[in-house]
Length: 406
Image 1 (cartoon, rainbow, N blue to C red):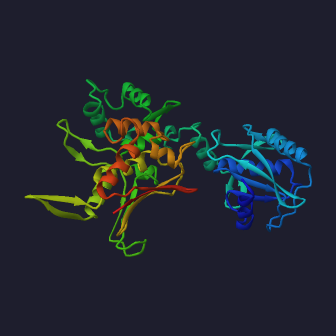
Image 2 (cartoon, helix red, strand yellow):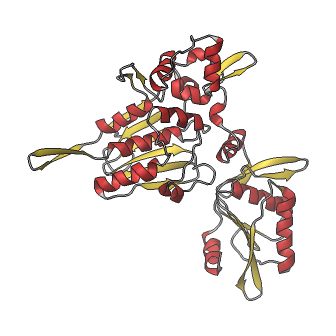
């Protein structure tokens, strides 16, 4: 941060990435702010600035101020974090201390000492507060410390999985020569080995990933499964939607030995929704008629698969949403990009998998690029070839959006 950045931060006021504090703040309170910023997307604590933006300045000497900040972080943060410390002159004789916390900190969740306990803190707007259980789980998941998809689905049994789809997967997709009978010990062990089920105290339950992929009624157990698809007539959401579907069910299709599809899954139903709610234009090249859709289907399929395979399923009550407008298509996935992945990284071909079991099995079906670089190798090139536009990739605090231009 330089002086110009400092002026802009103070004039702009406190927000989710900027906190004002006097320099007589308690070390534990400073550590709380640092933990909250680390668990979100980094930011700055400005020491020597009042809540109303008035600059009172640092009272400590430069050496003492830096030592005090580092001590506060070392003694009161877990895991340990080393912030960047700067002192900037605001006016002659008046200094502001800048504590900078990096974005995409890798060791989430960061906790702060509270007596004999360690408490996870989150930043919500200008407020730093204790994390809920669900928020803490998401932070562990972002850092790779927890795989939410391996949790058992409460109240489920293996009969809540579609045995037809499972058998089709084993025989047609995997090419297994023999498949155990449903209900047998070998059947249970097979599903557990593939992380589609979990056996606890003699009771086998479907995992989150197993239910999403093969659930006979996934929406009953996981309301946030599937995708909400809406087609609007204009440029913005309104009540006069042309088409509105809540697409629920298993992610993967049910096929036959010859490869024909008996029942489609959520992925294909979402792609079909786009096909039914977008136009086809035609032109002649010599004696040939060339038909072209509003959007290239390989790009649509890739962004739909990404939204379903990589979303944060621990966020309850939030669907993935596919929206078609008169000039664009958008698909929103609940949750931020995991761990250290950035939008620039996606464009360059960075690979990630929040839900590894989903990715593995959807790759078996051919939905996922074998190299894991579908954004770089499919979506961007196909849109450039289609109409010369690049997709927009937008990340905010609660969701990730991909926008394709018509």
